Image 1: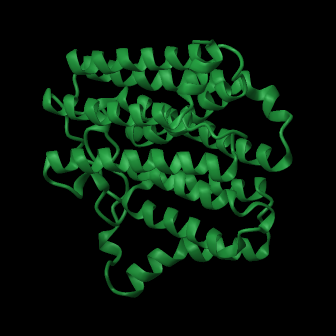
Image 2: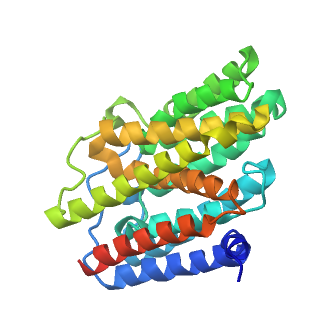
Length: 326
């Protein structure tokens, strides 16, 4: 089989389905192996944080696996509908699932990181449809409504608000009306909760900072940090190697790629600054890193792109084995 054919297969739907099956099987196996530390201690600013929504661990496992598959499907739709990578490749979604599998402790339970990556994908899709004001202001309103509502139960989502404001400028969708729509979206959730008497000032809980590795031994901490470092390296390295290709794109595609590059940078910075809640940013970083890696491969489809893909799969497989056996 020619090298170009191997690379093409890895970008196909069949490969994406294989990645989905492996993610589900790997998440289930990691759960059955035991030793999976439940994420406790997180609280939202007003509402209960997502890790407290589901009490039964097994239900939490299947809900989280299902939502990860949903996020991957949304990513595939995002690339195809927006022509983000100027190809029909769904390698992006497959690599995301592979990277998620590299941290089975996070894949095997529902928590805020899953909510955050779903919000990132859905809001990015809506933002890209607003290029040059094409999508109207209702989608801008919905973007910031979702981000504001999510922030009430998961404060790390607040970092997405300035990211998407800058994204509006990149997508040439920033004007007086769109800013008004964004402002209304931001205040609406709080307006409903406080105006409806559902919460009051006593319900506000500011973030309770503590170590993300509370209850985790030094080996577990080393595994999580190593996986995060590998993802950061993958994102940065593939972005740098694709930079010259991005410059040659048309204005719309450059804007979309620039926004995802901005989100990648924001996740890396926040993981370093807000290390107490680092785990909440991991799935969104995987979302960004998977795109950067898939974009790099798609721009070199006639070269040995499969080598990059196999290298990534091998590294995250080793991380999975380390965390399930170690």
